[in-house]
Image (cartoon, rainbow, N blue to C red):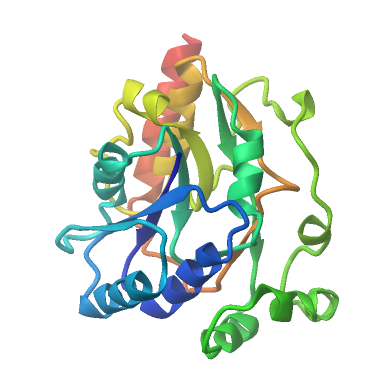
Length: 259
């Protein structure tokens, strides 16, 4: 089984769309574990409402809001997962109906997958947040127009999908295109490296550190582009005051391996 580890923090409107998009999956053999980094009761209400209308197993893990501590709550989610394969997803992302199926098709022992995203602008994001319910067919009807108007930054990866193959494999660690909002690995591999580095607090690069340590553990990174794209809702930039320090720590690990 697949476990989707869904990270969220105080954006219940976006989480509602994300959960509704997961409800539309063609491959339904998965559970959802919500890794909640201190949201208020408004988020809990969205989750409880989803539970009443969905047959998908869902587990809500919550920790007190003490700043950005995503690494800690994700490690709790990893430990709680019943699936042997983990997909990491953020609550500000909407998935396509074949999202789980595409990730399952790319899953391979000894590999991790770093997925891709399509950025939505503020205008389109605000429009989607007014919808009473997520509808992928309705969204897809105006894709080309949204691409020309700047509503989305990519068009073809939403229309064309490619399968597995050695062309997806990275030969070495590359910082580029690592997005914690869409990546996957085997639970056993995540546990073998002790999950995310919980000493990394504040926004920034905890995902790159996780991928680097998996690759150092002889896990091969595979690109999930042109298969697993998520729709990333527009939001203001997070507090990046810790980003430079977190990046420095990842670079130190890379240098130590090279030495």
